[in-house]
Image 1 (cartoon, helix red, strand yellow):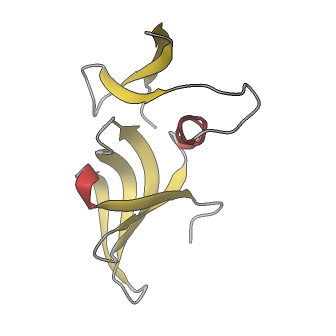
Image 2 (cartoon, helix red, strand yellow; image 1 turned 45 degrees about the horizontal axis):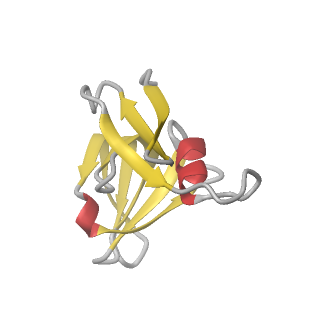
Length: 116
């Protein structure tokens, strides 16, 4: 497991979160959001909750990656650990220790309750 730091601060009335860990050694903007309700679950709440946990990342091409979300920046660039790559038919293609995905390829990120 990689140790990370998440720093949140207020900037022009919006919450800015910065993340740094072994993959993102420099603090980078994670998300800028306007908080409307304290009890509302926002995308940034979801992303904070899944950092360090198993996720599924589906790309625009249909290829899917499953692994531990290690780092995410404001451009949706993703670093994952213990990653498995699945083709569009859902068949396992490869296993990687670390995986880096460029954000413009990401269709969605979802929490994965258990690793298969």
